[in-house]
Image (cartoon, rainbow, N blue to C red; front, side, top):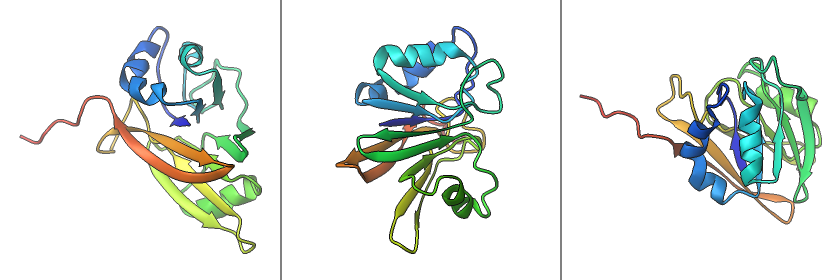
Length: 171
């Protein structure tokens, strides 16, 4: 599964994203986009490569008719998607409160690649994943996406992958 967020692309710019993530898209069976898509052509293009594309509305998605949050079952894994998870302080508790039975919560907004694991007292494991941004690294060293590997309903691995041109070398 390929996780994306914060692509911030306008009309006719989806090709720029596809150029950056083509190798990642080639191995994906599902794409999850955690908002700030900004133009529906991005989702349309993703759907030409992968039939299952799940997306939520980000704060910059004013023209898109998408849900604020979404919960889906993917290969037996309960997955929740939201754009803004709120401040870093208290995030794990907040996401657990918002999505108590989800195995994975995918979010965006900050452009910061993130993966943490929260374990409830009863042993239920919940992964919190921000894939970063494939298009706008902001203050991060590189643009990123994430791969979520699920087998038999269980999260096996979460991997962040650098996409796009390599960061410029310091002079």
